[in-house]
Image (cartoon, rainbow, N blue to C red):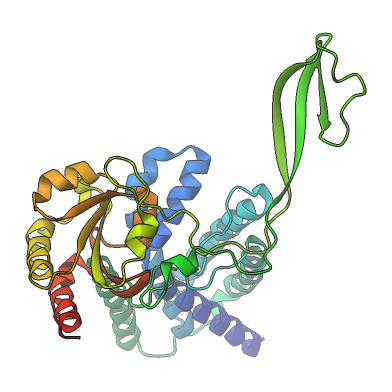
Length: 373
């Protein structure tokens, strides 16, 4: 029994720490996933609090995992873990059986799990945590109270500092398709041999006051009869695609609405894209930093583009000549650039480097290196 309890604690503790660390690497990613759930449930009023929820959840997963491993205050943490895993199992079950959520985000974007795998994982964890909960009184702390307290304090401090850092800069590990070294155009291609989504389409008509439904292979013999009145059609996914492009919605356009995606991504020389989701939530010193980068670009004849969902507002706020302002969907920008704003140093469609606004001086260094080549 003692051995089984120890093994259960190790599995639960390590998995919770691992899960928390991966999501703490990109708390905004978890925040956006929460918003996806809230959108489906019609709970839009919670969207403004998802980042706070994500920060707390990531921190709790790490601290709870450490507490289980060292056996610290197991009466309290066994209850908390039980409630948390029941909640997680509900979320992954909802994603699996409703089909409305493609992934639950259990391990962030770095290790995407299917709803089935996520649900099975949580069922296994539920069993292990129930076992720990039942025998929680048999668990003894590994160390003295002051040592255990110090370990937990270090875990809490780590959660606070690490998540603050990635929100100010960028994730330590970029798992998104826009990461450094990737080619955006290549990421927009569907893998060779992939099978597209297959849908069953039914047409709905009204005849003699009654609705009739049929598919394209079973039209009624008298369909040419003018008494058929078209009502609509519905479609149902019968076979999902075997694979899809890593980037499916990247598109940038001029202020006049002309698509400039390939024109921008085909430039042979180094250029800079400043991704600015919206001016209303941008960091306060962004324009001063951007002007320094623009000045260096001007001196080295490097094109500079501002890509924003609120391009006109960005143009008014920056007021810099010889800068091209482009439009892009806000959802695309918040996926490509976790910090608002983020600099992309590009050559053709290749991402040479990414820097948060806080690290604009690194952009200057990178451009200086590029200018010497």
